[in-house]
Every structure is written in structure tokens, then in C-alpha cells.
Image (cartoon, rainbow, N blue to C red):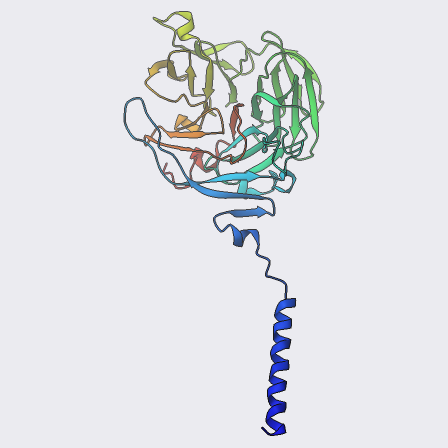
Length: 367
């Protein structure tokens, strides 16, 4: 073999050894979480959602109203990374919204668990399950009772431990209204400038946004009320009332206790539509629907009392967000899905931004 050919073979061997050496020194490719888990939709590095089909619902009359379609299911490991509700983001307010208490992590054995992640926070999302936002995370203890958003979406009245508070989404400030008295009961005036609240069942106060002063009031409120078009509407134990303004002057009244004993007529859960026209109530045995303007009430054959009630009473939603159920009473359709991927909550939710999209809870819904 001539020297030229021997040299060529040696050179090729050296090149091959170099290539193998380069391959050995090249670090393995690092895959992103999105590549590793293609069914997840990562919003931040530690937070994601997946699309999961809604569930079949059993109805007492045997009719299948269930609508099966995908909804987001959220997994939040680092809440501070998650988008907050932003009053300047118009895209968040093209549908009505639901707000609720939720401690996003409940498993203390999870390596990512911290006291902050296990703390109760207030969240919100659109009625179609999209656009989950963090509203408030500096709560010192768990929330309780119904929370109520002002009509301009800026102020949130809520119960925090034994306190009643107002959170300003624009400035980030929190105001304490009262300490240690009864369940939270709130109602905002239409101009979002005055909040009425209960300190006990019998003591009512009002709080002024501008002066921050609390003064006594005799407004006949309960835990379910609304101001609309200059009138005040309130759902009572066994009926609903429309008052003239913030007075005790009754304009309309409807009851549903006729022929029933007190326990069967007394409502344990109540809801009212944003204009005050319609109300629902659930006693230990029955569900009732009332038309306050027509002063009529009827006992309903329903497997779900709409704890939150949309515009014109068309859409209604269940009380808790662990499993969220929505009914469209006009088309007789229903959806049930589980938006919370981790931990659960049995605390009350509430509806706000109710007039968006003409009150329709889904963009594809028809008026």
C-alpha cells in the first residue's frame, strides 16, 4: 500500500474519532414542558390548563339536557405568576364573569406546596370557563359568605375571617368595614358609590366610597339584593320585594308560602337577576321561581336551583366551582364541568359584569 493511501486512511480515522468525540461532548436536547406534555396549555412555566369534556348530568325527569364540549381545567402551582384581573383589559369583560374563593393548592405533600399557595384567594373567570384571573391574594384568612362586585367592576365587597372588607381593583387598596359580626351581606348602589352591608341580622350600615365613612341605615336588606333603575329588590325568607329607592316603601311583593309550613317555605338559598325582575329560592324541600314585576311565584320541578342568576333569568349557575353547572332555561340545555384541577372549594361564588354580551353566558348563544 503506498504512502499516499495509508495517509488518507489515517486522516479518515482521525476525522471519525473527532466526530464521535464531538457527539459525546454535545449535551442532550432539553425539551420544553409544552413539548413533553402536548395536551397542556402552559400560561406560565408552572401553571397550565387542559381542555376536558363536560360531563353528563342526571335530571330527575329523565331528560338529557347535557351539552358535551371541552372546557378549560386549571392547574395553578405558582399563583403570583398567573394573570391578574385587569380593569383596563377589555377582552376580559366581553362576557359575564363569576368570582369565587379558591386555595389553588391543597396537598401539603406536593413538593411545590407553600403556605401562600395553600392560602384562600379570590379568582374570577368568564361564564364559559375561559380567562381565569387572580383577583385578590393578600387575604389573611379564608373567605366566607357571598361576595358582591360593584356595577363598574372596580370594587369587591367580601368576607375575610370575621371581617367585612372592600378591595379596590384599580388602586390595590383594601378597606375594613367591620369586625366580628355575622355573615356578610352586601349590596352596591347602581353608581358604585355606596355599599350597604349588614353587621348583624338587624343592624344595617352604608359605606361611602369617597368619604370612607360608615353610617347606620334602615335599608331592609337580606343576603340577596340588587339596586336597579332607581329601585331596590330583596329576596326574603318566603318571598321577594321591590322597594321604592332605598326606602321601606313597598312597590311590589310576591310570596310562595301559601299552603306550606314554615320549614318547607323558608328559603335556604336565594338568587336574583341583575335587574331584580326574577328570583329563585330553595327551601329544604322545594325550589321556587318568582317574577317580582308580575307578583307571581311557582314551585319548580328542577334538580338545580340557580344560585347565580343571569340577565332576564335565562342562565343560571350552581353555587360552587369545584363542579360548575350552568343551565340555559330558554333552550333547556345544561353544561357541567370541573374548572379546578387541584384542590376544591365549597365556598359561595357570585356573578358580576352581568350585562355583557346581552347577558348571554356563551358567545355562541343566540338572543
